[in-house]
Amino acid sequence: MALSSLIGFGGWLSIAYSQGTMSLDIGRLALGIASGLHYYVIPVYIAEISPKNLRGGLVLLHQLILCCGIATAFTVGNLTSWHTLAFIGTIPCMIQLLGLFFIPESPRWLVTHSSEEVYEAALKRFRGENTDITQEAATIKECAEATENISENFFSMFKKKYAHALIVCLGLRVLAAFGGSDGILYYAAATFESARVSRSIGTITMALIQLPTTALGVYLMDKCGRRPLLLLSAAGMGTACFLVALSFLLKAHNCMTDSSPYLALVGILLYAATYPVGMGGIPNIIMSEVFPISIKGAAGSLSTVVTFTCAWIVTYTFDFMMRWSSYGKYSSSLI
Image (tube, rainbow, N blue to C red; front, side):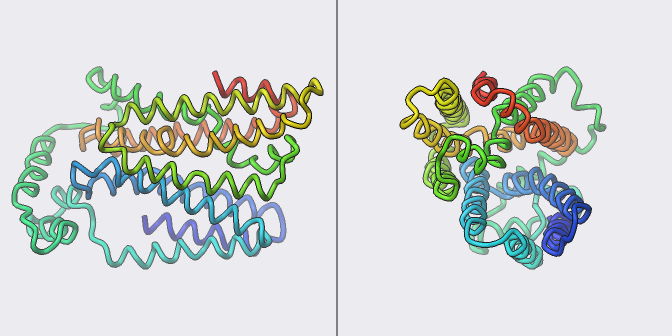
């Protein structure tokens, strides 16, 4: 996390002081690396320090904070220049870097890399000085000892016994990415303009509407389970893509020209509201729960690579597909 904060800080400075495409590319590359590290490490860290009965909600709380960041970026981005926005982007990096000096390492990591006193002290800091951690500390140690003598490497995750878990985790990542989330987020302003909707109103509303639904997801995560929220999220994303595709189809045939922009607006807002609740955050939770600690790092790394590769494909091709067929592009996302 400290490394990703430093890389992100450098990336934002490179963009802020940019005078040409080279420094912009370097800055974006640095931010991509920082995001990749954050994307996997932080949800795993949260899952490892959380009590079992609150794990899902606390990991999804990370998604809620991401939504807050997106809402802030869209709002500030409509009020200031991109140079200033890049300078503002350095602030969270510095806050996190300084904050890391005040939080301990994960007890589940310390149990295999440090003494018993150290990991118990870290666990007590998370649970409170007056909390009895004896049973939980013993459970963590038993899990660590159970996997201590298991020889695993990167290719161990492809063993038959892990096949189902790997298919589920990677499948969720691929489907979420090819559902168009990154393209819709990055090209939201251009999409609103194409649908003849106010750019500033559309992007700010899209960013803000994520907050209440994601907060509701945090509350329901450990009460309703992962699967119902995934189904709700997927259904909402599919409906949203259908509405946006219908809007562009009507526009292409000069039908309902007064009301078709509202279909696009409602569709993108519905997508923004339902994606973070399920497909945006739950794959991180499932990934941290279904793999043993001996291969969790390797499986998480592969999952992150697959996620960002799919996201790159969607982001790179989004504009070309919009020019080829705007309604066809959202129909493919719906499928």
